[in-house]
Length: 274
Length: 322
Image (tube, rainbow over all chains, first blue to last red):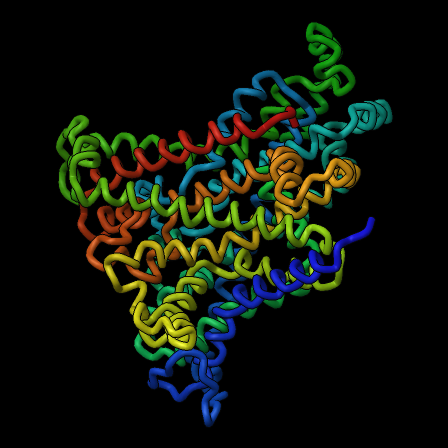
C-alpha cells in the first residue's frame, strides 16, 4: 500500500508530541528533585548545582527498604491466593458447568464495576471487629474478596474456550477432578494466569483507598498509601517530595520495563474483557 | 492449596456412586463428558464465593443498612428511613459532589476517547514502525504508576510557578497564568486534565490495536471511491471500533464517577467544595465527620450510578456475544 509521505510525518510528529506530554510530569519531578531541599523552584529549570543527595535523603526519609518490603508482603498475600481462588471458581463455572453456574456468575459480574468507596465504611468496622485494623491483613483479605469478580470473570473466559474433548480423554485415562484441574488445565491456563497476575500485582501495589483508611502506619501500607503519607509529611519541601515520589515510582517502573510486553498485552486484554 | 483433601474425597465418592447416573438426566451438551456432579463444581466455587461474600457482599448489604440510620460510628444509632437519601439529593454540597463527578466525565471520558480516536487514526499507518513501538511503552506509563504519584506530579506542574504557567508565559499567555488547582473556576477542569492524562494513552493504544484488526482492503476501496480521510474515519473506522470504543467509555466513565486518589492528593476536594467528588465525600463523612449514615447513603447512590451508567454502555456497544 502506498502511504502518503505527509500523512506519515504528521503521524510521527503527533506521536512524539503525545510522548512528550506523557513524559512531561516525570521530567518535571526529576528536575525539581535536583533543586536544593526546601527551595521553591519555578517551572522546568535545570539547577545550577544539582543536589543528587536529595534522592539519598528521600530514600531515608521515606524508609524505602521497609516500604518495598511491606508492599511485597501485601502483594505476596493477595496475588497467589486471588489467582488460586479465581482459577478454581472460573474452572467450575466455565468448564465443569455445574447447575446454578449462571446465577453465581452473575453475582460475581455484578461486582465488576463496584467502586471501592461504596463499601469502605462497613469494611472499616468489619476489619476493626476482626481485630485486623493497622495490620497488613486489613489490606490483604478485603483485596482478595474485591478481586474475585474480575479474577473469576477472567478465568471463566479462558476455561469456557477449552475443548471438552480434552477433559473427556483425561477422565477416560482415570484422572479425578482435582488431577484434571491441577495437572491438565492449570498448566494450559498459564498465559491467562500470568496476565491476571500482572494486573493484580499492579492494582495491589497501587491500592490507595484501603491503605489510607485501614492502616495508619505508612510502613505497613502499600507503596501508594505510603506516598500519601509522605506527601502529608514532606508536602512543603517540593524537591524532597519530588525525589520521594520518583523513588516510590521506581519499583513499578522497573518491573514494567522488564515485563513491558506482557504488561501491555495484559492491560489491553484486561480492559477489553472488563 | 487447601482443597486437595475434600476434592479427593469427592472424587472417590463420585466414582463409587457412578456419576454417569447423575449426569445422564441432563442434556448431553451440558456436562456430557465431564461426569462431574454439580456439587463438585460448587466446592470449586466455594472459596472464591466465601471471600467475596465476607469482604464484598456483606459490606454492600451493611452499606444499605447503615444508610437507613443516623449513626456517629460509636454511640447508638437511630432509624432515619430514607432521610439520608433525601439529604443526598437536597443538600447543595452533597449533590454538588455528584454533579462534579458527572462533569469529570467530560475530561476522563470524552477527551481521551475523542482525542484517542483522532490520534489513533492519524498514526494508524505507522503503527508498525519502531517509533510506534516505543510510544506503546511510553503511553502506558500513566497506567502503571500510582494515581497518587500522577496527582503529586501534576499538582506541581499546575502550581503557580509550575511548568504549565511557564509555558503559557513563553507563549505570550502569561495573563491567564494562575494556580490552576487553587482557583475556584479552574480547579475541577484542572483535576480533569490529570485524569485525561492518565487515560489518554490507554484509550489511544486500545483503539489503535482495534484499528489494526480492520481489513486494509476496506480503506483501499474507500480511497478508490474517492473518500477523504474524514469520510474514511466516519464510515469505516468508527463503526468497526464499536467494541473498543465501548470499552474505553466504560472504563473511563467508571474512573470519573469513582475518582478518589487524584482528587485526594491534588486538591482534597477544594478550594471550598469546588472539586469534591462522591468518593472523597464518603471518606470525609464516614471518617472525619462521623456521619456514617449519610456516607452510606451517598455510597449506595454512587454504586447505583456506576451500574446505571456502565450497563447501558455495555449493551449498546456489544455487537456479538463473546
